[in-house]
Length: 499
Image 1 (cartoon, rainbow, N blue to C red):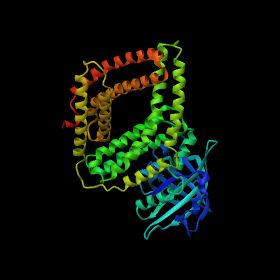
Image 2: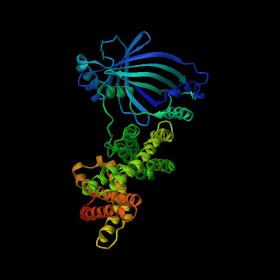
Image 3: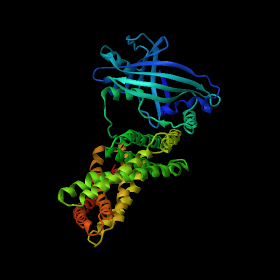
Image 4: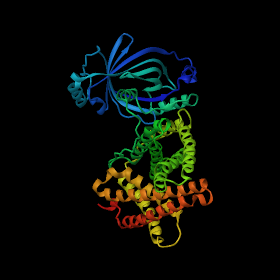
């Protein structure tokens, strides 16, 4: 068994010809060969579900049988267990797989294996030695994936670590990225092939659970949480660029907010300038996605019930047209923010490199960190909630106070999600439901405030009075919900303090 460590970067075909002239490859001969690969699976795609890839590769006159355990890539970096031996096509001999459980699975499925998809590409490969003791294979692959009569292009750069440290791999990738529009890619060729085979549409990618243990070193826990946030972001970037579905932008923003929350939670343990270096860059990216989300909410959630209430109102078509025009502009800005080969691509690579390079650190108690982080955030949220609850009977509306509470609750919620694996699920569930309900109500109240600003700007003077009146009524209704939810929240005991 070998552990394959590589970084995969997509490259626009128009820029592929420039790679060979990069200073990193000066004086290094290239080996060019065509690689034809056939991936196999069962009719019900059992191997895909098990995250295992079985491939036959034709390399010149030789054939190789490869088995990979396909751990997901994040920020372009993938580390996978790989078994590869010379073999004859169709003879699935898995005796070289030294993982007994995996070999048993492959032997069980062998009679069912059938071709699923192929990849056909030309590889130009260079072996570079950036410094003594470091060897990296740099490969440019150009060709296509074919499955079920459908094709998708391949144009990507792979850097595989042959000797040295992962930091050397990132340094080489960064050197290339300074001169070429390279973007860290998450899906492997196999993952793309399966999507093509099933004709799977783009789907929003939500946050996955951060699997921690009380004995996980705190900085290792940060690495898991941060890379999980990156996976969520990258899982939605194609949808932001290629789809009009609002959920992709929403989930991308959630991923960035969660990542920034992780930076705050672990800041006391991170290197001195780590958060100060990266948080402003993530904040700037989030800001470029925010306006599109506001218009999506207005058009998708606020305007429809308003139009249902006043179907004959002559000014609502004007309001819709204005909002659609503004959303179109905002979506273009969001797509530009996540464009491949620019500042976003550099941020992904820089942050992944810095995060992977973090040491695990001393074996401090992760649960102690969790208690401190959760306690601090809960105290802040409790303080703000009590202020709002106490002023509920007072005249006037304090939107700024609600905003502060909403931010505090989000930070508490994300921190609780990061550390949820440390506590029994049944202990957390009621508290998490209360947090979710409070955030939903505060979010809807914020949406109404944004809608009021839009109506005022679009329907000047008396023309906006009807819309403003309806929005005010909705706000009053939600205020009643908020008051009840605040009482429930303030009556609950934080679950991490028990036991």
